[in-house]
Image (cartoon, rainbow, N blue to C red):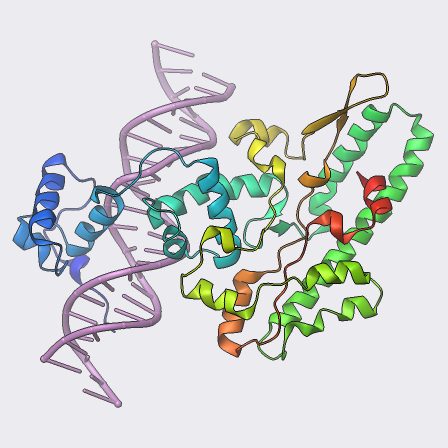
Length: 325
DNA sequence: AAGAATCCCAACCGCAAGTTG
DNA sequence: GCAACTTGCGGTTGGGATTCT
């Protein structure tokens, strides 16, 4: 397994491709196919290394390449597959016809990753940031906005704020517990994911909620992912807040790193009453870290059922949610 | 208008798996 | 089984384009 020496060779051109070079490469491949990439540059009359030619062809010259901005649908697809596959750009690209792994990687690094971070998600796990203090600005903003919305006296609000802080901590705690359980379940040493129901035993999840955990993708699901056989529609519905695609981009969002109000309902007097977060826009407590699970499972033949955490509203009782939102 | 800052993406680099002799 | 070679992948970067001050 030696390293490829091709790019170390002297005298080979590097850097941006000229239209003439593109033309030569295109004509050669269309006539003869690429064959051996290493031999191609000489045969095509190019002063480039084979690697450079391959890259140019696969990322730019291939006739089936789709150009232009990513659609919202493509964005969703990337997010979903990334939450499952992690940074497996080539695997993700297989599910986006006409898009290259490089393009997807760039799009992820320049747009999607930032979006997730701005929304308080960990871009690697697709879950809300786990550190409570990182979420503090959001909580503070939440509290302030609530005050504006409700126009209640501060004393009353302070008391409510305290309750909310407790609830937020509770929420965080539950989340951490779930994550811990998940990591235990995914560790090769654990026999199966069936350790999750322990949560039920300690009274954190009621049976109906657990039932939602049992609607799980089969182990075959993960196998099919690694085998690249899945289509987007078969993925677990890893829930990105509906507000995700409404998030301001770049600079706008930087100034509003907290969750911005996205929906409004009619108040009693007919004036719109802004909600901080709709239930649907709550960040998903959601996603079992399937990206890691994939490796763990492939290494340990996990035969237990896997987990599909549901969205927030189903995890908490209505009272909790209605109080929190 | 101009310089600084930031964004964006094509291309490079290095690693690892697969293939061949 | 081993080493040389090829291919593919993911991370990183250079520099042009765009936006901000």
